[in-house]
Image (tube, rainbow, N blue to C red):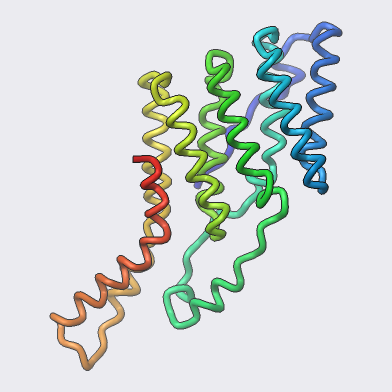
Length: 239
């Protein structure tokens, strides 16, 4: 299971900020709150302004303020992703109750449908621009994208896949050995999660009395292959 990395309380882990930096922090937190506004135009504009400010003036921020920005401003914007439940495969989805199972998938909230992709892409771009100050954020980025991929909603899972690909394209050449180890390990865990292991027990128990052993084997193989395709084919983006 993937969890977001916890950070120490900001009040005890950082020194007091100068008054000018406090003004910056108030502006950024205000934009962060507006980025989750129920009105699409408001939250879209707030995100644009938030990341534009960080890109334009980020080189003036000390490491102390960057820690506050990432932990106290940006990551809380993605609380809806962190709170998403992990998708599971149950036996009903492998029987003739498939349509009923698909119809029971909960609807995706509006922010995740309309704003999630652009917000994650902007976060990855900011991470790329200030990687020296933001290298600690890599595990959290991986956790956010993986939580999207693990969702039963294909559109939300596709968001996670696209962000994975964008992150590797932007940062692959800049990652050191330890960071690549983290990325590959997380990707392996994600792929392992996506493999429908429940099918192995289901296909072994499916043995029609009218079929010979030679004819039941191709049927089982076709079933496994056709069920895996929707989960795995999006990862061709990363090749």
